[in-house]
Length: 401
Image (cartoon, rainbow, N blue to C red; front, side, top):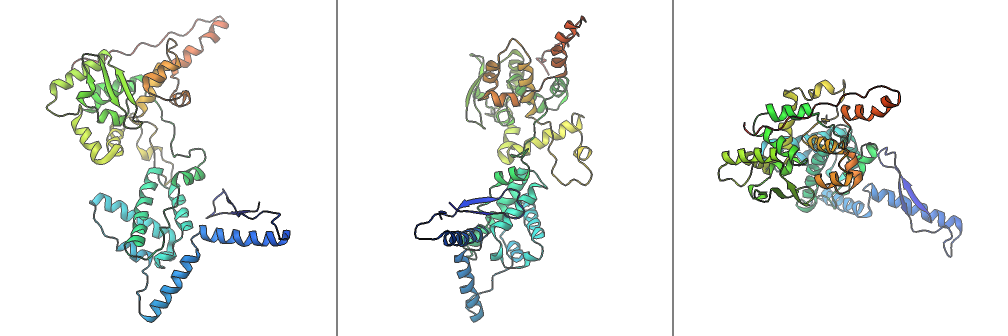
């Protein structure tokens, strides 16, 4: 079978597709089959890059209509994006305007050409450039704004026969740009026990209590803490009954005495709201997890737990900085703490925090310095030395504010 192979926009990974032409095609010589396969491959590459027969025909018809005065000239990409109706809030509009501006800057003089000249290859190259500048999440937001604009050019204005951004696979491009990271994630660092204690004792409400609920709730995620309802607290049975927002998995989490003390105190302060943390639930439902997580990151910086972004970003680096510690690091800390207890099997720990596999569980484990010291005890004993003393236990969570 003959294959078509080409590269798009300097991608290190070539695209390879079957042409449907066999090497020993019936009623053809080997040279004829190779020539036919070459023609098919060229057409496949042109189609992939947006140069379709349909598009060429539409361009020819429109050019003739414009010449006769029967149709308007297609606007440039820059003109069209500037005319996309604005209907969202100021913050969203600023982000969308930035996405449009970056795309035009990337294209340079070509942005002043017709909006119909933009190809899927252009969009793929732009997304790859974005992934070298910002996080994958931000690149996805910019991509969605441009895709919506092109979709409007197809469905509403009839300027395009297809959306050139529709076929861009963000996950695949992220993996191609950075194979080591792929999903644009880096391993979170767990908090130390001192940092957990600091957050519970000194962070302002409701964050101090949210950290406590996550820690004593076996690593509850930020989404599940923000959206925790009072009807999920089964006081008589002694457990939390929740359905995880991320996985939709049903979990029953035993309430440890410190967690009971925290929730009882919050219940005394609560009104008629259905949520344990009503203001955070409102923030989460309005702006999503990133909106709430940003507040937590600011607290981490204010208390010296993480450094300011400017202090850890290399000079001249444009890439969006992702903190190694976030609210999700509490979950890493919980897993590391539980797995460090030799009395608990990996299966018990995995079930307690709600992970589906041992592989996922291992990714959350980071041995503390104390665990590493204790692991060195056999070395010292073998050499005839006394083992190092154990670290003091974490003090209990206070029952009152």
